[in-house]
Image (cartoon, rainbow, N blue to C red; front, side, top):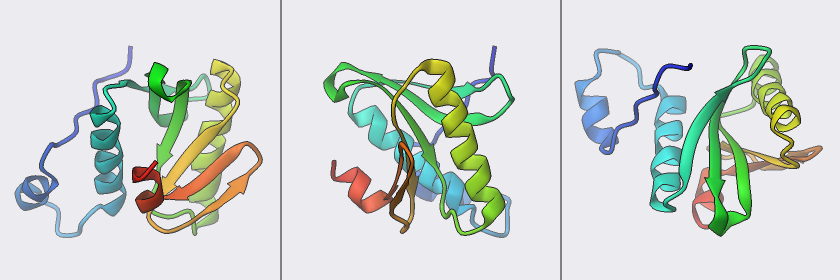
Length: 126
């Protein structure tokens, strides 16, 4: 059993109460994605694959066509970040037999096989 992940309804309060000197934009983007998914009234969980890789969101939603796999990453600029995020999503797609996956980023857009990479602003409007 995986530990529960916690998200904040108010990211401003989260930032104000944080003891970190720098802002973790990736965590804020993940929080934004979670709150957006909650508004869709979907069942949201996360997954640790058999290889130990984490997928941020496994969404079960009949209104959006069944199960979705979603990663949130501020940027995929660094090769190790791209490999980690896309690798985890690909592994989860195989394990759960889901045809496509999505990586939500701050600005990047594109496609890698059956994984689409979409900027947050565009994803939030879908």
